[in-house]
Structure formats: C-alpha cells, structure tokens
Length: 325
Image (cartoon, rainbow, N blue to C red; front, side, top):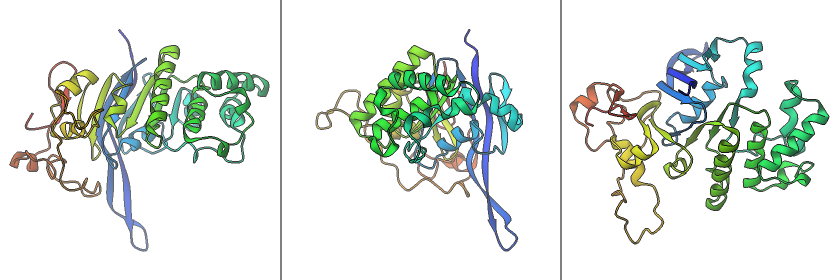
C-alpha cells in the first residue's frame, strides 16, 4: 500500500487584523479554516475554488511561507511546523513551490541558468560545474534549449518563463511539488503544453503534485483526486471521475456548470445546466454563520444558516460538507 507523503490535518491559517495606535488585534482573516488533505506518493491532487477561497494560502502554509494558526502539516511523518529553521532547511529541496507569476519570482538581473542552479549550490548539493550539467539536463526535460542558459528572464515568453519555474523546482529532485495556479496567466494553447509537461514529468520522475487552480477543466487533465474549497473550508473531495460524474455539493455543481464546452452552440448530452451564483464570496474576516456557502446557495434552508455541516463520508472516496446532499 502506498504510504501518505503529505498529511494536512485540521489546518487553520488566520491573519490578524490590527487597529489603533498600539496595533491591537481586533479580528482575524480566516484564510484557511479547518482543512484536511492527504497525498500519497505519485499522486496529483487538485485544489480548486474561486479567487479568495484560500487555496494559495494552503500551499504557502504547507511549505511554511505562512505560519499556521493550528493543525498539523506532516511530510513523510514529520511535522514541518515543529522543525527549527536549520532542520527545515534540510527538507526544503524535497518541497518545492511553483508560483503563479514566474516573472516576478525571477531576478531580472540573473541569467536563467544561474537562477535554476542557484538552489543546488546554496544547499550544497552540487559544485558550480556539476550544477551547470544538472541544470542543462533539467532544462532539456522542460523543453528549454541549451542556448537559453545565458539569457535573462525578459527575453522569454510567458510559457517559457513557466518552464523555467518548473525547471527551477525540478532541479532539486523534489518529492512534492506545489503548483500555485501555474497556467492561469497563459494562453490556452500554451496551457495545454504546460499541462502535458506536468504529466510527462510526473510519469518519468514519479512526482507528487498539489495542483492549485480555479479552473476545473485544467485539473481534470492532470489530477486523479480533486478537492473543492470555498471561503477557507473544504466543501467536497472525490476522485476526478466521481466528481465530474456525480457532484454532490451545490457549489461544486456551479463550478462544473461554468466549465467551457468545445461546441457551445450545440449542447452535449453530458453538459450541465449553467448555474449562476448570486452575490460575491463573503469577507473571510466575517464569514457567515452555519454553512459558509448558504448566502449564495439556491437550496439553503434554516439548518444551513444555523449549523456548520460536518465533513462526512458520502461513499467510496467521496466526502462532502453539506446538510442537503
């Protein structure tokens, strides 16, 4: 049986709201509010939801770019948030993050080859000469040419920059890659190329992905399991096929109905009726009582407004937090 590589248990990440002359804490932004995720080795898990749902904060909290408020983040059985900075540094190469905007994460004055190999040298994993060979190898795996090594970030297109971001994460031979909206800023044709690259690398290198996206049509092509987040809370998780075949939560149904179809004028048999949600996602500093989705749910009842739903088993590997399903 494949062991769990990453275990996130009841994770909460709150950011304080301060006010007054003495910066007293007057409230909290509940960016992540009790999330649990388990990833097995070699698995690709998709985390989806609207902007502001807390997806990116989950990724940043896992790798300790943000501090947790409570809960556990275990990588190979080790609680990352209990490690000292020195102990965490030893594990950093095995946990890599790919950012949404690759250009802002690259130093414009550093040549691409040096930027990719920088972490190898800083972590003492290779000499400068060895790093160059490893960088050229991983650049080739990511669809970059040898002559790109000495170029600067501004000389590349958006798709090429994202390949650089992938190469920079991959060169450390990580066990887990957290990809935070890695294709959202790219053209559709380039998105397909990057998704195919992710799939190819997963097969060839046995990678494990936590793939964060707002687009279900993207995670459908890469991920085997999907979790749906809303306002810092997990609403539904299931295998990809089960989620697309039998969505149970009203929010998941709304997201699936918004997925574009190849032939919009000719309705497919499996196409969902378009569900338009009213209003905007609530303020995470003052979330609604009960089910957080009840303010936009067309099926909400009194119990939805008053009582927080339990994240419960719905059969197979399907889990849901809803009073109605």
